[in-house]
Length: 228
Image 1 (cartoon, one colour):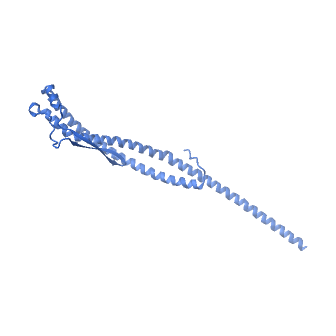
Image 2: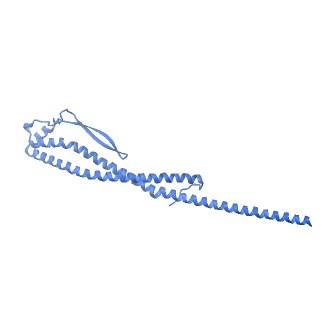
């Protein structure tokens, strides 16, 4: 792993050690976040799969009722019956935070106060299957909104998991090894410099000691000559 291009000084070493500590802590937090996101994603995926099966079953029954109604009613009567809808909805999109991920929340309100007022035609001129189909659609509509919100949440969680995984890998395989390698390099350089300084100090000390010995010998020689 290539090290960072920095000057091998003690200040740089101290800063890199702080960065390594922060990166290691961040790596642990990101791994914990990734694991929790995966847990939430898998739980929601199972729930959404079951929920989708239920909604698809209800829609299948509704389509079956529409098919029967189309068979027993003329196309003209069918078009006239459904030409002007009696009930409408207004959808509001909110948000909730799931582990730092903003996921949508859908809410709706009907355009009329009576939520059961959904038939845009007289019941005497239509078949019961059409009534059942429209009632079924009104009943399944909230479930369809919930399913859409759940599937959107799954997509957003999947994106966040991928982002978190890339960050974890970048810390684990790039940033932390680079910092560790650079710290080792600077530590070795500083130790090498320290040993060099100690060697120079020892040489200076030896030189001073040798000089002191020589001076003592010279003084002793002078004293001997004076005594003669």
